[in-house]
Length: 279
Figure 1 (cartoon, rainbow, N blue to C red):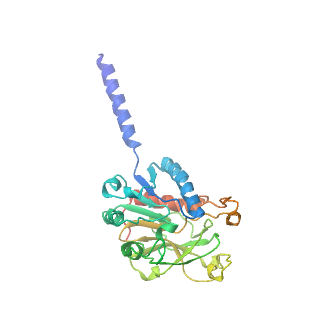
Figure 2 (spheres, one colour):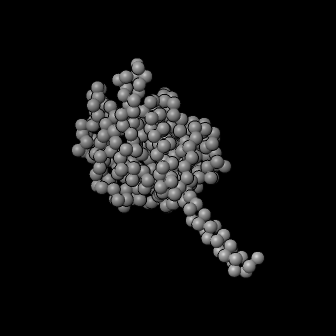
Figure 3 (tube, helix red, strand yellow):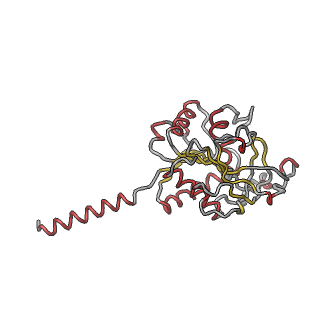
């Protein structure tokens, strides 16, 4: 073989290998979901499984999703830098133990809306103290607004990677907003990132008076300083509930139809996948 040709082949091979290494995914994301209860949550899960792959291609990370919660084990989780809970939480003790170990060892996590829900004597009982009281800090579910409506959100911590380049206030997508048992402001380990701005009140349309909030402090995005985690209260699309009899259940709003809110979620993913804990 001609010596110059041989050198050229080697150079081309090296360049191709370097290019392949450069385009390798920055980090890997795995989303767990159930997708069976409440049409609004199901709609969100389907939307998320369309939107996240688009973001993965744009921001150079990989995205997988599964309904098999048995995959929540140490061996499987070792392949991923970020875990998402799109709608529910793990229920089996061994799954919960594996997730806690994953987080304590530096894994990243983002949970949406219903993933933080717990209520005594319900299908999702208040029976996981570490997750709800220590990790999330929120404790038991308290109440919610109805029906799903937009809200003006305010940035509470401008220095956190999650809120990078966000305006001081912005209009969120329609959502069912949650109130919690615990006051997160009293927990020194919790870093409140976004809360409902007072200009949102009254928030909700009812018909029950308890479903309309007129005042109060309601965090909607926060992190725990001891973990790489972000909880996002968004994740409940508005649905045409009035036509349930016809089984229409048409989606009336989309969680990922908001550029500013999307930027916050992308910021969160990139921080969870590549960043460090923020004290």
